[in-house]
Length: 221
Length: 255
Image 1: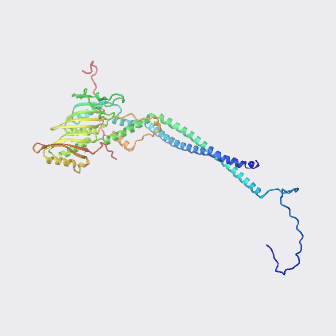
Image 2: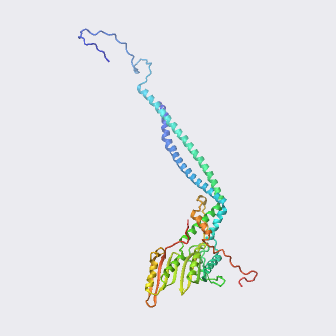
Image 3: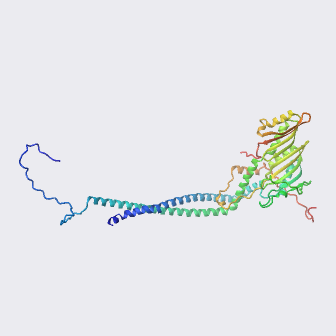
C-alpha cells in the first residue's frame, strides 16, 4: 500500500537524492562468465518435477505392493481351494466306499421301488372287467327281454356287446340304459355297429362302447 | 539416461501392470472362479453321496424289513417265470368261481434274449383233463403280448355270475394278473368264455455303472400303503398252492 501525504503545492526543487541502494544479488546467471554461483541452481520446474517423481514413485511402489498383495491372495485362495478339493476327494472316496459296501442293499431297494411302481401302474390302469360286466348286466336287467349273447372285452376297455331284443322298444330302452346320466360314469362312445331283424322275429344288434373306469385298486387314506 | 533411472520404479510398475495383470493375474482369477465352481459342485455331490451312504447304512441296519418288502413285491411281480404254479393258480381261480375250464393255452412270450426266436410257435395248448393237467398245444401269435408277459388263454364254460366271480378273483390276485381280452358267447344260460390272462413279470433292477452317483430310491407314502395292502386280505395269493407231486417209486412216472 502506498501512503500519500496531504496534497502540497508542487515545488520546483528537485527531489532529494536518496542514497543508492546496494546492488541486489543477482539471480543465478550461470552463463555469466567469470562468476561463482554458490546458490543451488534449482528452478521451480525442477522442484515440481522432483515432487512429481516422488509421487509417481510412491504410486508405483503402491501399485507393485498391491499387485504383490493380490498375488499373495491368489496363492492363499488357490491353496485353500486345493485343500478343500483334497478334503472333498477324501470324503467322496469314503462315501463311495460306504455305498459300494452296501451295494446289495441298494439293489434290493431299487428292485423293491421299481416293482412297486410297476405294480401300482398296473393296478391303477387295468380295466376293472368285473365292474364292466356288472354294468352291462345292470343295463340289460332293466330291459328284461334283452338277451346279451356276446361280450368281447379288450384290455383298453373297448367292448363289443352283441345280443337280441324282442322289440324295438326294448332295444330303445337298452340303448337308453347305456347312455343315460348314470351310465355316463361308466360308458362312453356308445356306437351301434349292426342292427337287423323284424318285428316278428325280434332284432339282433351289436354295440361298441368304451368303458371309462380304470384301475382295480384305489388307495384309501 | 538419468531420467530413465529416476523413473525406474514407475516403469517397473507399468510393466508389471501391463504384462502381469493380463497374463497372470486375470487368468488366475478365472482359474480361481472355475476351481471354486468345481469345489462347490463337488461339495454338493459329496453331500449327496454322504446322504446316500447314510441312508444305505440305515437300510442295511434294517435289511430284514427291506427283504420283507421285496418279498411282498416279488410275490406280486416275480422275476421268475414259475409257469406251472401260475397256470395252476389261474385254473384254480376259474374252478373256484364255478367255471369249468375246458382248454388252457400258454403263450410264453419272449423267453430268452432278443436274438432268440420269440416263442410264436412254441406255445402249448392242451385239453384239460379231469385232474387239471395241461397237454401240448397249438400256435397262437404273441404279437399282442406285452414284452415279457406270460399269456394264458383259458376256455371256460359256466354262467355269468361264475364269470364275474372269476374276474373279481383275478383283480384281487396278489400275483398280478391282468385280463387281456375276453370273449363270451351265450347259448341259453350257458356261456362259453375265451379269456386271455396276462401275467406280467418283473425285470431285473436297472443298475448302471455309475449307480453310486444316483440317488437312492425311497418308498413314498403311496408305496408303503400299497405294501400294506398287498400284505392284507385285499389281495389273495393264488399261486402258492403246492403242485401235485408225481407217483414215487415207480419205473415210469407217466403211467
